[in-house]
Image 1: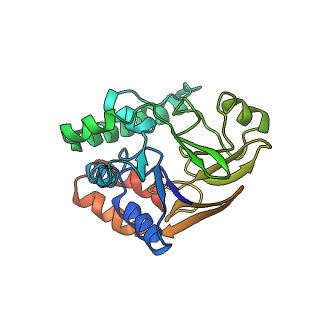
Image 2: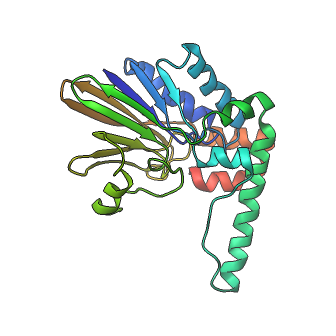
Length: 254
């Protein structure tokens, strides 16, 4: 059984198409999971929602399943991510500028969605995915950690803290996105993976991340894949569609 997993598209349609093409070239998968953050902060929020929605509805969600992430929630509710308060005047000015850009981009992203797309995104909130791989056991998918779409579960998180996030789940393998970095960690009873980010990777810029897992009996082979996308094309597209802060996007993609 082959499971494809990707996350954190962030309105980057070119990167999404690159991943879908790479998945097809790799022979496809029996089951595909999308772990959220579909639309916010990129130049094509509505188009990315439309693309994922079409994939999820093509077979009534039997082989393509999707959940929401924290930035999808921001587009739906007007909530914003938490941040530390400023310690001095210089930091306050930076914070105020960052918040203004952040809020402008999120509000612009919401404004690009149709009501039908907005309604569909609402169905994805607070969800998790699970699948029992024959011979292997249960695998779960979540955005950040099980039950919460905001905490940072990183390669640097201690084993003890990472295991605490998984305490009330009876599975062997957990897969989450959110931090835009790929990793594969052994926690003893648990193994946890992150496929990285499709549309805004932090680890290898210009390389959309995703994962292909192959289950055979009691074992799983994990292929953390990267595929290049046209960074300059995405930035040019942002300028063409009236994206409010193309320079903000450029600093995060280049």
